[in-house]
Image 1 (tube, rainbow, N blue to C red):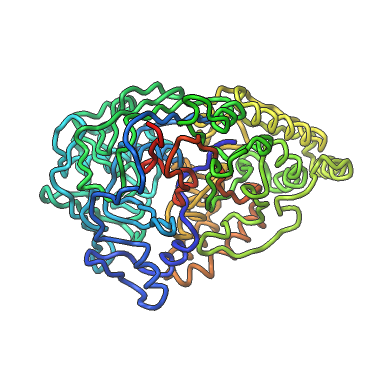
Image 2 (cartoon, rainbow, N blue to C red; image 1 turned 180 degrees about the vertical axis):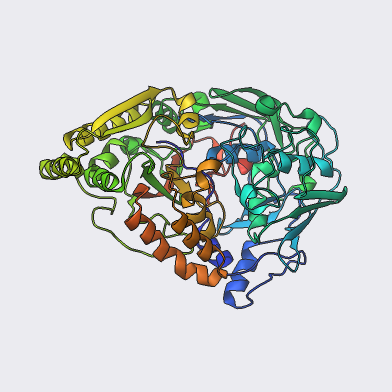
Length: 585
């Protein structure tokens, strides 16, 4: 399956943070001071210091191999916006903040990383000040400068070049709607960020953004020295501040990481440097790679795959401890370009969708793919349960001859007979090829014309990420997880008109009335937002239907028998890489 987009955080943490204000530099919580405030204090630790506590029994040495059936589309820090890219980046890129996992509960806690605190906001909420740790070095031994953080932030505004990356800065940061980055007019000033001295980074906003400390954990907040930036090729030799550095990168095929001798564990409250190296092999065959990991013969015992175990391999699981399970509050959907497909046709596509057969062909299990009826998942603050007819994630769709005939008749009535549906699919992915064939068969039975475009996996993510591509189905994001613990990282990001330009639009919606409603809810106090997101979620599905909800996701991924401390990272729904070790190096 295509891997989930961006980060996810466990429900308990989400609910706590969404009910409260933002972190202060003294370790307290600005905002509510009731029970919810106490819960949030446990999700934030502004005083966390390095080194990270040692993992009991951990050994040093050896190489971990990651056999990934998907291909990471980019490893450029300004462009990373998939959970696997973020987890990999965490091994060699540090940001202002980061999540550490509570060793007792596995729950994520936001802590300072390269920043010395979690930021302090001004009284009007429009200025954030981060104190910076001193003496941090890049992998080549040069010192990280305050200006490097500012440059990295400026760089992220070059969204025509880094079109796959997150875009909150365009909406929230001062002049974010007009500033185009440091390349268009070299040396052009940017008023949204300043570094008055080597110990301080100041970010100016054009509207309140209380979630900024959480956003600051993204790779785009890693420092980048301007003189080292080669723009589109920077990912090949990105400066490392974490425990590992790039040895070699062949985009779409392989990434090798080796130890960074200039990483200082005393400054890092999150990461470890147990193994000597990492070898990521992308675009592998899903079934074959997962079978290798389960069998754990020879070097495969030190390998893992981070896609949920295919249902066809359940009988081959001899050791249940090899399946790492955990929360991944994400929703997988089937997006439809609303600019190209009329609403009534979108509703007929949903009616024809073969939900039940899809889950079987896609190799999904009930434990990891729970039929969905909403866009916001149950684990996210603001979720309210509702079910609209035919949009419950279940049903035969056009596999039922009666439904196929009903849809075909309705298309004729609308004057849309033979309406063409088109999408990309990866030809070198057996499962996704079968899923594409199933959908095509079902839609053709219902009277649609179908045009499928086969591409290699290495190009797939980039192509579906083009909002104006030559297809009308399946543009990314076709799945979504919370960027951080707040309902504001769902509907405003996916369904406002400006999401198209930022590359995040799910269904390419353009509706000024809906934009105004989303903005109205976004401006409410957090506790009022919680009550408003659910009804708005229902309205979007009922009145616009930009995508068809398929399932809420959880994690169950296979790891080799020689890998130690394999735990689920709730913030991303895949194994937490930075604390893995080999039992027998």
